[in-house]
Amino acid sequence: MPIDTKPKNVVVVLLDSLNRHMIGDYGGTEFDTPNIDRFAKRAVRFNRHFIGSFPCMPARHDLLCGALDFLWKPWGSIELWERPITAHLRESGVNTMLFTDHPHLFETGGENYHTDFFAWEYLRGHENDPWKSRPDPSWIGAPALPAGSREWHYDRSRTWFREELDFPGPKTMHATANWLDDNAGYHDRFMLYVDEFDPHEPFDSPAPWMDRYDPTWDGPRIIWPPYGVRNVERGVLTEREGAHIRCNYGSKLSMIDHWFGKVLDALDRNELWHDTMVVLCTDHGHYLGEKDIWGKPQVPQYEPLGHTPLYIAYPGVGAHEVNALTTNVDINATLCDVFDVEPDHRTHGTSLVPLLTGTSDSVRDWAIGGVFGNWVMVYDGHRKYARAPVEDAFPLSMWSNRWSTMLYAGIHRLWPKPDRRATLDYMPGSDVPVIRQPFQEGDLLPYWCARVRVGEHHLYDIDLDPTETENRLGSQDESDMVELLRNALVTVEAPDEQFVRLGIA
Image (cartoon, rainbow, N blue to C red; front, top):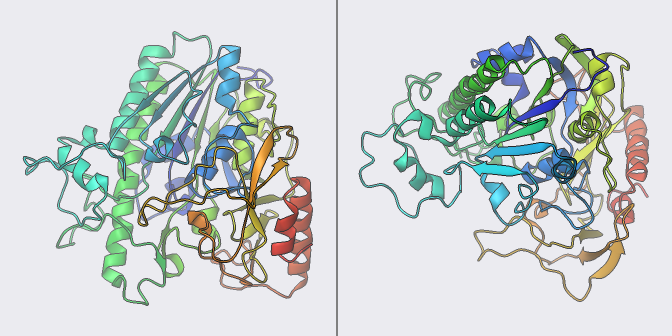
């Protein structure tokens, strides 16, 4: 297909918590990723792709709605003033299909991301998906190997698996490949979206994957990584247990890579590469002991978590590398470009098509990201600046009309609710009144901003210091990055209170 002709179809595969530095094509040597490496041989590899809104559901908001939301609200659903790209594609007759095993899409705080797909299939049993109400008493001899328990739903669900294909990740990829075989030739145009929760924890896999990288481990497998900072130093984990957890992530990574290969096989069989754009991306990485950090605790988005992989196979374009700065909202803008969609709400992305086709070598001068109520990050392509609140977490307001966010499951399933302090305001570019709820010290805060680190700023030059050991605060670099952050927040029309709480008003 000529490069100036847009692809007819799109396949997006999101692998949750996919660590860039562990992919073979990106230089990883610990674990095997032969099928991602195989895909890389026909795709454009983006070398400076960074996350925006964090973590899981905010990142999906970036991808499906194209608007950074972490400056206005925490983890939450799609709001009244915005529409995901799937709503526009439904109106224009493009078939949209979702395959997912991601439980957060069907919980409070993520409950309407799937509703505008033309069709969707939820493959059950991952993480805390309430799939089974009791264990299977006859599970002895099933492929799920002995493992420690967190008393989450998965610990019951895994007892019902009878073969590798019963595990949620393989099941999702198998259904995806089958859909391509059965439907790709039927629809005039389609967008197939795969939201695959692997290699996210629990780091559970059957033989031959489990123990692949740690064959000498003796005892129940540790499949639930404890989130925290300095876990080994504080005795939460031994070094041996940490190495074991890391290997279990690697086993799951290699397993889902294997099943991703089945999707590539289906693309081959159906000869779709000539008119189909294929995207492989993630929401964020996952700390596995780097700086003795584990999981996704309250720390800045260091390289292992914030610098993420992105591959795009674009018809008529050969494999090559792009060193331009990009971020997740740009993926949404690229989808809009390919399908000629004009969003009717304020978005923050820029299409990557000019980078793919070689008509431009840059699409943005900065990218921002972060967690609601915590650090705000700004990148210029080689420097990374994380600005924390300077005095306390406030002023801070949540802007939402749906008012659904991640629950505090451990304390009677609570979440913050609007009260008499709330006012009506307007999001940038919108005429829809929105509830703006201010918070103050002592309030129940949304889950992901409950432990704010005040005054703890970070600045790294990742070209010179890729392991981020030299905090360059106090230099001219910091003055440059403060000004860049201020300009970025002005450009996205961030709430005034963000400038105040960050001390850059």
